[in-house]
Length: 296
Ligand SMILES: *[C@@H]1O[C@H](CO)[C@@H](O)[C@H](O)[C@H]1NC(C)=O
Ligand SMILES: *[C@@H]1O[C@H](CO)[C@@H](O)[C@H](O)[C@H]1NC(C)=O
Image (cartoon, rainbow, N blue to C red; front, side, top):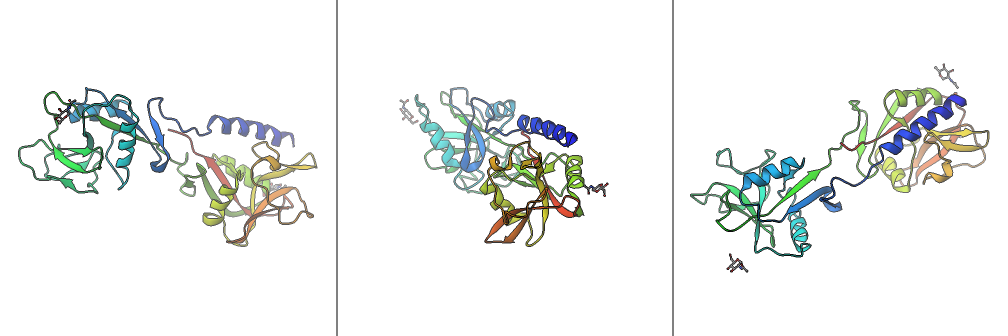
């Protein structure tokens, strides 16, 4: 019992330290729809494509280009939010043919998904601009015309990865957690120990939406899985993150009358979702470990 408490405290601290915040830098704006951070460089320094490329690189970001059909609208919104308008209609984007291969590619080496106007316009240096109002891409010079400027946008995508090389862990964006089912059945303490050895912890479901994700993607019908709650002080259930199960955001019991020591979950049916139950801790079951994703 004493050892378990120590464990709970230690794990509690580490999960606080790695809690996610939607933050990259003060000057970057997070856009939910595209799950990325953006910054408009709206000044007169944007006169050549390379300086935009390098400025973004300096900020640990990359020169923006629309990766999906609608992403250009982010730029329009960012420009609208600027109080002092410059007389510009286009920005440089991260598409070029700097290598002179005769094909436009994105700065990270992908083919361009939308058409580029004036693709074969002669006598130009081959960098791509984007019309702020329409998102239309246009082949252009890599230098803005004398006296004019082409702003640009830097974009930062979060580098999300499960903090392990164990391929059994699967990442889910909605909860910012990785989950793994360990199929080898063990008793509850061995299951907990195994998760810890892997750098994780037994699963603690913290919301209805997390339960929905697990229901749809992770758990299989009819199997008991050990998860991270256990009866403490002979009384109430506490999670391995140190909180009363009541306060974790998801508590849904199948049977209230057979309360054993160790927590399990099981899926009644896909439509009915996940129930909690309790079992004798020395029984062997497969179990689910979770890992919280850290921000790079
Ligand atoms: C803005 O740019 C357009 C086209 O380049 C030009 O005709 C117009 O005079 C400019 N307006 C200002 C206020 O500089
Ligand atoms: C759990 O399993 C381990 C290894 O098989 C064993 O040493 C331990 O006593 C078991 N604990 C319980 C509570 O059953």
